[in-house]
Image (cartoon, rainbow, N blue to C red; front, top):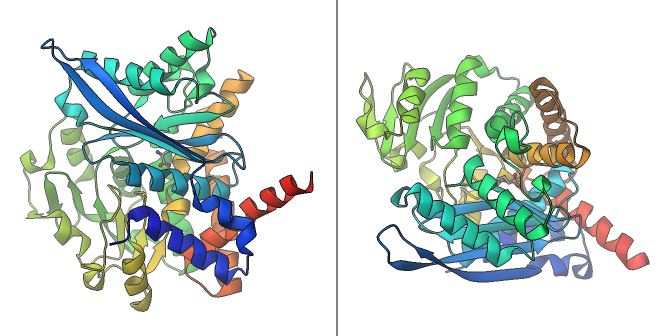
Length: 413
Ligand code: GLU
């Protein structure tokens, strides 16, 4: 079976073919520039040393420093990190922010570690990659299983080695360390902006839509909150413990309050039906927002998807084979490289603020985010119309063109 990265490559090659690009122009993008496999020994609270496996992949630095999050999850592996790094390259090009793509990860279940163990692990990981990251080379950020606290440890460890306070080495930091207002909510907020744009194109109003959200982490949780506040009816949500469904719409504020205490959905009580994550994906709903992990909609369940629109808040939730089935069934998919770019866009704003030492208000951050997302959406839509292709293919064509332009500009010298 083809790996996630191989499937991603087939998407890239198909887009290049449709756009009539010469292989010479994009072939370098098919192989990551640099991959690090690292082992991180940590003395656990019980005195035993445990060695964790970690990775950092810099897929491309063609358009600027590698940029992308660090994932802490038990399923992290090199194929996943490589794919996530490549998605960042295309995402940054679609959003037109001056970065390449990178990603990192550690194979760990963060909830099984104490705070001290997690800090040691993060600092150990940072020491292993310290010569390869930096504000102008590779800039990590949060992803699944990591947060502002983890970013603070990375910034602090890096700064110690650099011999100077270097907040711009990482984004998604806590506010007192140079974090940006609006960064925590940025991906979820961007998902809302992308949804509004697609609904405008289809002459639909958010208020009339039923929505199912898979995943209630930072992205899915924020999206649920913002969609609810915007008047949408959220009929289903889920986390790793399973999902809940109510045709009348769920009480999102109560659900989020429950989740904030660290509890799972399976201990939340109320007037709804319990469903599995799989059932959530196959619900009859107007909009489906997968906000968890990759490879959720595959050739096995794609034919059962009954949503009209899929907004990819997660990275890679729909496989290449599933994409074809969805397209045949006229299901519109707003691809990850566009739909979830709000996070990295505000990461870019954070980096700009760090380099300038000048900080923006939350309103300014959100307005700039909205403008960037609307513009990226418009440009992708134009390509879609020009080539008569899916939004995913259009996004890849747009990104490839940006990357090829940069490549050509370099070759002139
Ligand atoms: N992890 C996020 C993503 O997949 C954010 C990356 C960043 O801000 O650099 O887009």
